[in-house]
Image 1: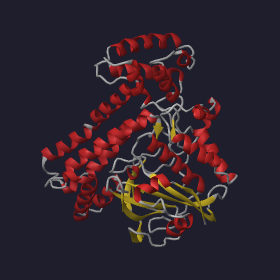
Image 2 (image 1 turned 180 degrees about the horizontal axis):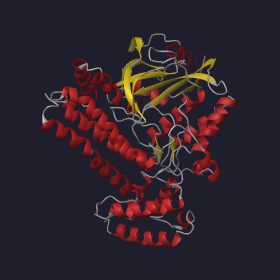
Image 3 (image 1 turned 90 degrees about the horizontal axis):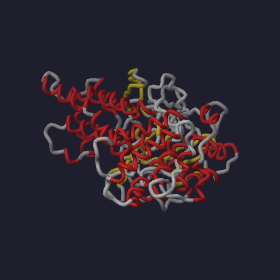
Image 4 (image 1 turned 45 degrees about the vertical axis):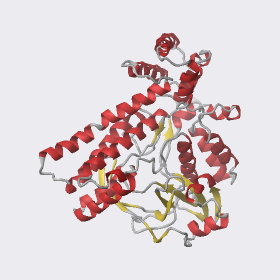
Length: 464
């Protein structure tokens, strides 16, 4: 058993940065007691809708909530969890183990999302167990240690609702509100305000995902956190050529969780949360039911507001004009017609605010004349901003990353780490992804997209 990755920056948030490598292994590889630890570690039970099908037989099948600690800066309570540490009562016949590559992958993705400013769970460490796991190719086993605002999911509420355990559902509701929405704790009627708060967090989260081209890949209700964090990095990926129908997950054969479907799927999941809350509401009261329906229906408006704000900032705009969304959508349509690289296009558009636009034009083929027409409209709009071009560029650069975890580069780093026991490429990639919005010349090789052939063949897997 050996420590393969330690994230001291994230560990510092809960005061664990001083742990030695041996202590990481002892506490999280062998479950030796740690201050704040739960005794015994807790495996949670939940239900969930998986690809629309209700599954009452879910839970932490290979993970534990190991400890709870306070975040140094905010004093909020955080969960420390492990993944891949063995069987639990909810393993459903599985071995409860994890392979090294998926655990390192989650580390990369979580740190990239954190650096991009998107709420996320974070990896604290990856421990190689010294065992081989029963997967294709018998890969090396590993344990991931991660920190989360909580591990409460939509599926956690579905569990108690399905079992008609109203008392426990109310206790769960009170706990979730106290932890994530303390301003609502004194309300006598919490369910609808809590649902509104979760809808707002999810609308903002999905808009931010889409702003960087992120595709979660498996947005089942057991993978949606009440806290509004990105959780459970399985078959996730970052889109390169822009196409709302983009899917990378090997298990999403119908495109249910495609890039462009994510807002609708979040709303669908939130409808399931609303249904789960009905037992603690007066479902016989038509007004109450209508209020719940309005909250869920209102998710689309919430998301549209956040997404329009994202797009406006990506164009370098801060003031609001009615036609801004149409201007942004027209640019997206240009990208889609030629499947132009999403990240490069917006970054080069940012550069074009104060510099030449030749590099942006070079991304296009037959759509270059249409791009020129669009750029003229965009510059006319920017002239009405009432801000300097430098300020507009700063706005655009702050939301249009220079570098993202490009899928082929992630796979190369994981292959080196697993097949050659060389963590150098993994560590270099993490270092680059830690400064995603800065134009760093040494990071430029990481900005290059995969070849069309490689991109078309890329598939992601759950790792279970």
